[in-house]
Each structure stands twice: as C-alpha cells, then as structure tokens.
Image (cartoon, rainbow, N blue to C red):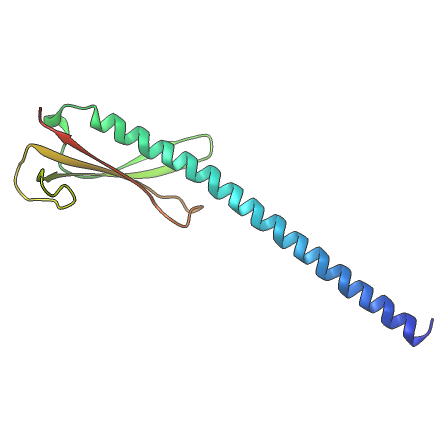
Length: 127
C-alpha cells in the first residue's frame, strides 16, 4: 500500500468518524427534546391538577402561605410549590398583607429534566 492509498484510507476514516459523530449528536439532541417535552407535559398536568384542586376548595379553607406537595406520576415525582396570598381585585399580581375577598393561588412545578419551571396562577374570590 502506497502513501497515496494510506492518505485516502485515513481521509475516509476521518470522514466516516465525522459523519458518525454528527448523527450521534443529532440523535442525542432529539432524545433530549423528547424527554423535555414529555416531562413538560407531565409537569403541566401536575400543576394544573394541583391548582384546580385548590381552586375548588372553600375560600376560608385556603390557608395563606407556601406549601410543597410531592406528586407522583409514571414519569417521576414532581415537587409542586403552592403559594396562596391575599390580593386586591385591581392588582391581582401584587400580594397584600391584610385579608381581602380575593386570594391568588400559584402552583410552581420543578424538575431536574426541565430548563424552566411550570407556573400556573388563578384568583379565587369569596363569593
């Protein structure tokens, strides 16, 4: 085998290695996106479920403060931070100190598999 053939074989090996690494990187990225989508959907479902359960409760039974609820799903266990605070009807994003006729319920779900937190909010009134 001459020098020319050795260089051709070496070039082919480098080209094949580059193609193989590119395909592996692409497959890994696709898997990561798929896992994040599935975990994101499960986290959103958990967050919505917890928020709906708390929003159905009587106004007086919703304790103001922060609690953490561990919710298990087939994908895994998600910690859901539930925050309840009094708010004004004119500014529901700002918590106030005293009792009002409105409470803002926020559910925040985190996961090590997500780059973001899933947050849902609702306002419950004393009617």
